[in-house]
Amino acid sequence: MGAITLSKSVLLFFFVVLSAVHRSSSATGVEANQTVSLVINASEASAKYIPKTLFGVFFEEINHAGAGGLWAELVNNRGFEAGGPNTPSNIAPWSVIGNESSLIISTERSSRFDRNKIALRMDVLCDHEGSNTCPPGGVGIYNPGFWGMNIEQGKTYKLVLYARSLGPINVSVSLTGSSGSTLATANIVDSDVSNWTKIELTLQAKGTDVNSRLQLTTTRKGVVWFDQVSLMPTDTYKGHGFRKDLFEMVKNLKPGFIRFPGGCFVEGEWLRNAFRWKETVGPWEERPGHFGDVWHYWTDDGLGHFEFLQLAEDLEAEPIWVFNNGVSHNDEVDTSSIQPFVQEALDGIEFARGDAKSKWGSIRAAMGHPEPFDLKYVAVGNEDCGKKYYLGNYLEFYSAIQREYPDIKLISNCDGSSRPLDHPAHIYDYHIYSSANNVFAAAQKFDRASRTGPKAFVSEYAVHGSDAGTGSLLAALAEAGFLIGLEKNCDAVEMASYAPLFVNTNDRTYV
Image (cartoon, rainbow, N blue to C red; front, side):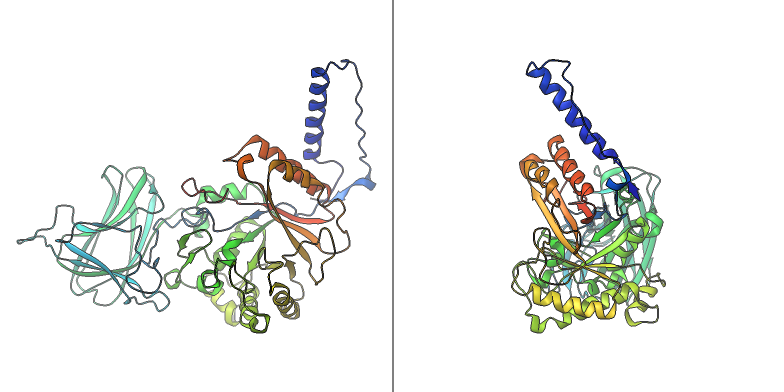
């Protein structure tokens, strides 16, 4: 967008105000012919340039926005790693088909993948004949996905898994509806899988059920190991792994930018559970995943650093990468020890922007994107201003990134709207979650903000609490009024995004 004289949102605001004045006059008995004047200065001198980046989106792995949401993976805990790297691991929501007389399920550190060593072992005690006969449907394991797999008639689904056995295997793979009906099925028959073997199948659904599950069963006695079981619809957006319906919803917003991957998800309650980008790139089977301890669920990190950059490109939106600056909700890294985190940030930028022959750019190229991504904004932390080591750490990141990438704009967590920042920054971050009254009143927040220093990035705003509920007209009007204030002050505000972007109806942890 270029210079404008009067936006549609401002016109709507004045229409609402005038309507309210008219109704108020009628209700209080003021004469009906009283004149109300509204003077609008629509001259060129009053116009302001609205940045293309003013309105964008903020994606955080919260409320199962990615896992079980935008990221189309249907299997929940595909690597059996949700309990961490030790055994016995937590395999939930995987469950057992059969009883202890027919099979024993356990976990071992025997995977072929070094970064996620857990594999599932299935000791089948029953057989297709003899004294201990398996039940007609076989025994095994099943995964219900994220509150049920939405299997749709006519659609195809790609199954990938790794298997190993001491002898021949005959495993039935099926998509089963909530009533027990078989929506799709295939068999894995192999005489020699003594070493870990990658198996790929395509399943076509002959029915629809939103509460389906994936089953792996057998009627043959023996020992079978499974690892990294994935089921994806084949119609993801451009084959990039994004659910097409949800992607199109975001695309239709025409966002100027996308901020990712958090949010508190970046920080973690503890640093050991923070999002670390290097653990989320490369082949999906080799990603260890991690427990997001702020929002209390496991993610396999199929939606990782590469996928977020790809998402931004697919949306035709500016990527804004938020990285951990050595600060979590409960622990911090002293500035004297922050250099490994600084190097991690520099490596993450090289992954996005580096030549295909560079160390990290070559990994991006191997993942299918030899050309660099257009990363021009990075945020040093999330809501960390005021933490003991934030400022010292921030300055280390600022100096190193500006030295290597002088064109990149750095975003500080500290609010510069009321007084100048005491440190260099190109943009400062501002968040507001509050009642409808407070959010509406904040429309004037940037009226007196400096026009010469760093601009504001309102990266998280929302009416929160009882005024919002699961969505209300009151909240919508307050947020609209707030946005009018941001648009009016677009010479002091560079970007704004609502939060959270997605809420899974089964996980309304934060709305």
